[in-house]
Length: 289
Image 1 (cartoon, rainbow, N blue to C red):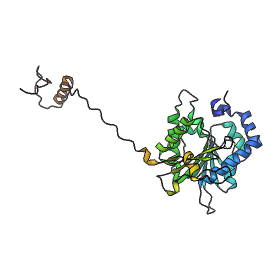
Image 2 (tube, rainbow, N blue to C red):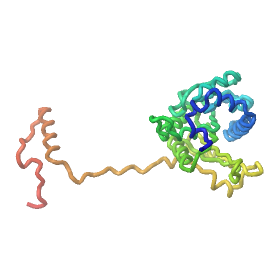
Image 3 (cartoon, one colour):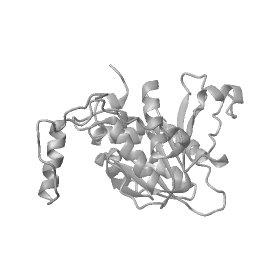
Image 4 (cartoon, rainbow, N blue to C red):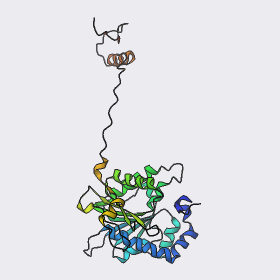
């Protein structure tokens, strides 16, 4: 049986009171969350000017990643679907504002107010249909579309994800691309089975120098060389959204007698003078007389 939580139950059910407390009290998980959040904040590449930014933590859970944002001097809004997780965040008196909601139904935030967004191990949940009404493609579309609207122009969003397979990764990337984002995937420790981490780094707006994808970290903790990172880091370009227009189907059958009778009747109702219907009406003429 798979140990991936998103395959066991919907998040609002899987993270009940018991699981939420177990998750938040684990020193191992706290340490992992802190390191992943620090890396996501680094990839956000916020200006170092001492001005606090308003950040969005999607799938904030009990506020572990939000604490990293607070420690770095930023204000944040946390969104999560699990009431139990948010209850523990309130008990822990986290600094951020908390919202209960389903990211697959879109983000109800004002346009352009968010300076950056992070998400730790949450976005891949949208690839699963937990209810009969859930369609992963539509849920991802609603999520990325609403995220694009609420981000300030040029702002970044960084998602640490665990896609189950290549198809899931491509689905997430394609949905982000269709929403208008530029960016791609950053792999840290790409050659390590245990330490490998995958980040989706997106920029709100068309491709530019600032929208280029950062390089992932290698085994020594430094940035990978260009040869190592070129295969793993995938660029998503907004220009790829321009699809060729579908050709209109031209009916070879033409307009038949029924259509002609219908149009003539419409003209008569309008009071126009219309020739009477005969057995020759709508008859196809021969090529030559």
